[in-house]
Image 1 (cartoon, one colour):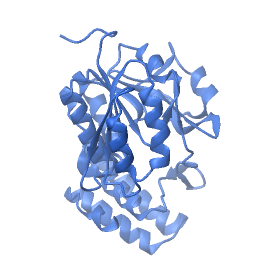
Image 2: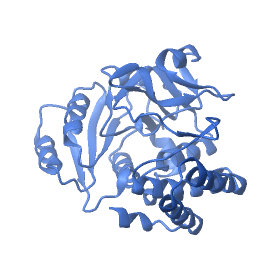
Image 3: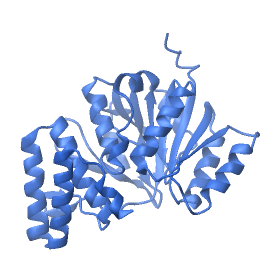
Image 4: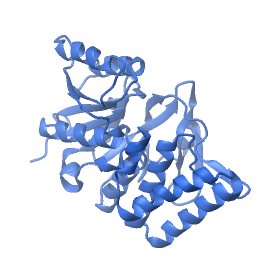
Length: 309
């Protein structure tokens, strides 16, 4: 029988890799968060002293307990959330609060999320820590093509304090144990990029109740303007200077489009890539890298990203 909203066991899961300076304030904030029963930190084989610091945190008994899962190899965000979510559910969590190491939830973020107890997969707005009126990840409003970038705009569009059918995983999102048991764990083979989107699509396909709660916020460093303009600004392309991220984006996007949207969308992505690196931002190197990632996606080959580590 599902636990009532007031007695659900809630565990936070944090995935980290070589960002100790960001991890410290996050763990401190979580350890002082009411209603949390514990924090699971998945360390993706960090080399910056994270392991030693986490060992000391795990030994403390004066606050919310911290459990450390130290991985021997870097499995990326996808692998980290796979392991962390699995551990939290095995540890009896009714709700799991998922977040990267570069986010910092507001003091009352969890409390505001828990006020919406009729959902399966829901989260806060992710706002720029240097400009708290700006969304780090813009939101396309349901039922149209409007994309909002400012906190005030998304709040005006909310109904009953939330935007239905939209969530930004894995940045402070809550997921129920029941949903995890229904749809499984994040796809660890994705490594990075698209694993969070795939999990949302899987939840959506399973009929999960999804929403963004607009009065709950997580502070996050700016990631710049997402999407490079192309075709005279009529659309954008997810260009990243990182070869690792671009390879994973190309591969994982093909897998997601094929699985959830169909082959015409895969073809459209291929043509868009050819145009962007052939015309908008010409680069033979990027065309070759794109072809490598796209081919891997078509073959379901999830080994190629290792050459960039």
